[in-house]
Length: 231
Length: 231
Image 1 (spheres, one colour):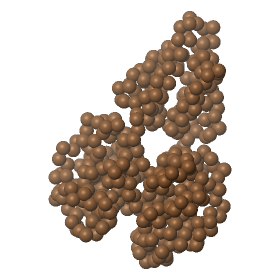
Image 2 (image 1 turned 180 degrees about the vertical axis):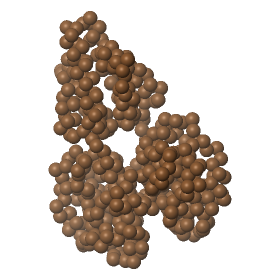
Image 3 (image 1 turned 45 degrees about the vertical axis):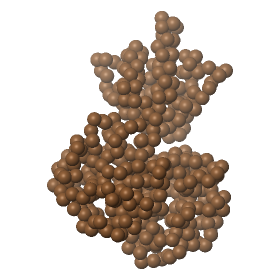
Image 4 (image 1 turned 90 degrees about the vertical axis):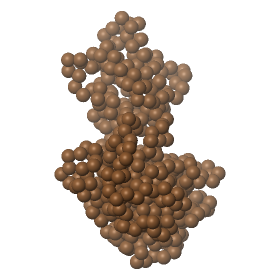
């Protein structure tokens, strides 16, 4: 997997300790690109202390005044939010957001995190193309800023470790399914319902390795061949 | 999904702030059962301050002197470790460990976390049945204690949200595959290779929902039926 890691943008973080913890969280998962929009206290010794050996991330962090200045080169912005406040944006789990980053690699991604006390404002959300929401317990969704960064960067790192089949390989695989399903009249062209989308979602979720695609395509060939022998 | 959440056991935590952060991390993901083995400072106002509104987890935390006293009712112990030091235990990613917890529900699980500075000792590891290792960047694996708890409890919570097919339903599903694969002579009984285990791994990873199992079984029936019509 070779996907450019997303930029992490902290909007008006209050506590320097959180900035340090974000740097450490990012570095454990192989991310480096950190922007700070109007941090209350930065640079600050507490950020440095908490960052442990991730001080390089802090040293290279870029401080800007406004969100727009943190979005250079960026073409797709995910905003993070604990509460979706009547907002019309598509909402993704961390894992599904990483799937977007992986499969829509034409974009350069950034992930926006709001201030600790009240999150991103409605105005901030106008920069976003989609939302990431971390599923939490229904009675307590109070994730600390740095922990939210840790979960999302962890999912990104997990995705980077996969030796998945490529998207074109998966497209060929799906075409193969479609052909076989039609020949079995299991897929009715006049009324396809949601059969192929459902299969795609299922197999995409499994993140098939190339070897697994080969097994399943072998099986589809066997289905086809057995029908031809018997015809 | 109805699986008993694992017990979280912190062995000799040094910093009360970390205990508070663990409580908060647990509560965001719906876990409550916290044991502390010989904490350096507990109870402590810093733990309380950092826990935000998760003070109930701290109040109900049970403090014991030795690991063995934290393992009442427990039949399966996962140890967490950044470095596997020539240890013979099976090692799981957080996600795979949660799969174990889900699919082997006869056990009552605990997850052991070592002290901040040097992790679990070799002696501590003797209580463990398996290891959980969180994949990190190769050059920096210094995950803070509470962040490690957050990642693992997040994976557990993700798993709880799934409306998966049950294990018996999956067994029926695999039998169906096996029958069809044999009838197609794609599965050679004399030389089954690793075909069924590979398929099981793949579909288990996708955590099929019941509706998806139904689609795939419909497809398998169509394969079967088309062969019978043509015979």
